[in-house]
Length: 112
Length: 113
Image (cartoon, rainbow over all chains, first blue to last red; front, side):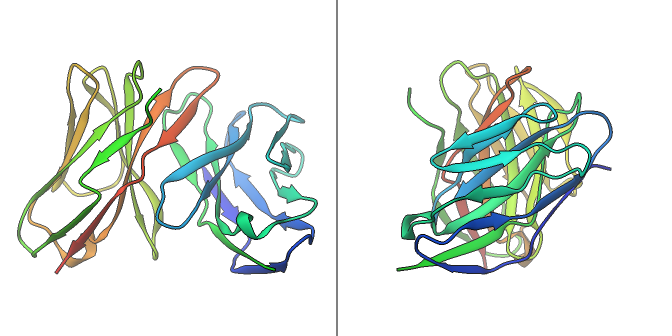
């Protein structure tokens, strides 16, 4: 079945550092890919998405490119802030499916 | 538009009891999904409803059930609670089709003692 694998956390960075959180997937056909963020005590918020190969999703300085050849959707940000501290989830929606499959989540902590 | 509302936000129950959680989706959304989030298992899909019909169900025992009303509000019920049912239960309001997106509520934190 469909699955998502994220890099294990926790990840700790200093403010203004470059961020990469790796995400790879296994799916048949052409899934849509998503990144969600969860702040403490809150539900998940959609951060960005890409629906076809080579699409780049971007929001709030975060970017991720749908790479079908490497089945990856890595999340990047050029300069992180303390307010980016949260748990980040990579997810996929299989072609024709009606439910998201989530990775295990990566906890990110940014120190001032 | 108002966001997804889940009630109650926190709940403490005893083993063997049953519980009902409620979710009101974003106005106009007809599809609702439920997820269980635990530290050990992560986010696991429970079920999805569209226009009062359950279309998808995850791999959970029959103690977990749900329904959706004509106004798209949804409830999930867990009977004969077990300690392992302690979790954050998240409801998502869905936009379907090519622009599929899920908007999550804040969740209900269930603690079973």
